[in-house]
Length: 78
Image 1 (cartoon, rainbow, N blue to C red):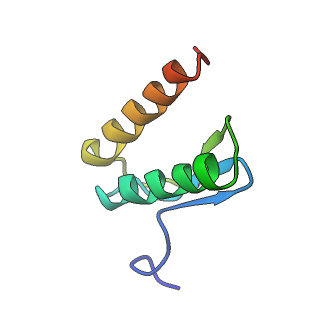
Image 2 (image 1 turned 30 degrees about the horizontal axis):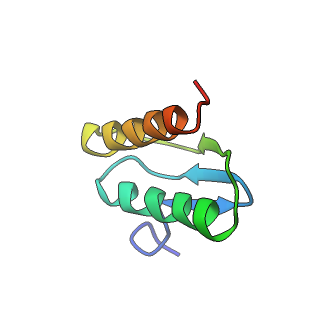
């Protein structure tokens, strides 16, 4: 599977792995993985891991950091 077909963020259990931060599409992929775990599978806490990241772009990293911060504050995990 090439880089255009593979998901930019995946979820296995309560672990969300972000595979790329090189374009804004990874934000949508992260939100989908978060939603599937939180709403559909019932997980309330997550581990977010970044695997083999090469090149980090602000249009991807900043929204994901904001979402992680929001989720932590909403669930009193700060």
